[in-house]
Image (spheres, rainbow, N blue to C red):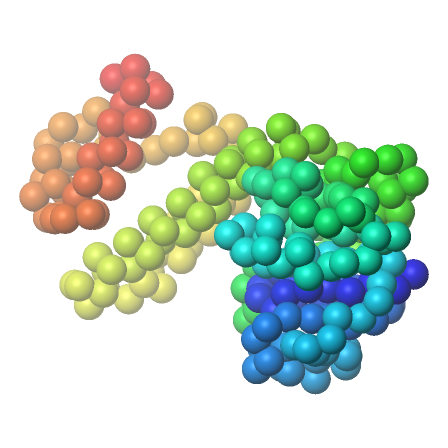
Amino acid sequence: MQIVIIGSGNVAYHLAKSFVLNNIPLAQIFGRNEQDLEKIGKELHIHYSIEKLEDADLYIICVSDNSLEDVSKIITKKDCLVAHTSGSLPKELLTGEYRKASFYPLQTFSKSKDLEYKKIPFFIETENEKDKELLFELASKISDNVMESSHEKRKYIHLTAVFACNFVNHLFSRAKEISDSQEIPFDYFLPIIDETIQKVHEIEPKLAQTGPAVRNDVRVLELHEQLLKDESLEIYKTMNHSIKKMYEL
């Protein structure tokens, strides 16, 4: 089976790397950013191009949600399977006359960070049973955690991931701004971050909540608000309001 990955960002890089590490041949990685494609191609020893899209049985599109529909139009072959890796968009957004699918890896991807691909959940959606079996077999070579998921369910999977990952990381960034402003090394906070993450492996998050809001410690909450301004103050108030509401304080 001839496979082409379209894209040159974080998801495209890691998907290509996971294929290479699991001896899954790639015919090509294709995209518009020649510099990024060259880096990926040379590192992983994959043929790359910004000009000619190779003929393939399976195209996996790894681009931003905003670009997905336009990029899908470059595939003119009809007798092939095309899958996107979006967490939120339906497979029907793909515009060609080919067979359509979703091939969604639930993970946060950065090119500079290695991943354990076997642990990444993959969610598959196809138009027919044969394509489902094909993508299940492919994903199972990469991961030990492959499941079928409708678009309706996948939307909520992605939404949950935004809360659990993207928002949490943004709070880390805001926390570092505060520590940097007072010349406090952010390394001091890594043990409490690690313990917080580890706890949700063992305790339901709602039961693991600590801090001044869940204690309704008004004096500390007011003191903290005096130390903050602008966006960080608004985030602090919003988060504490949400915590109090959850625990009916």
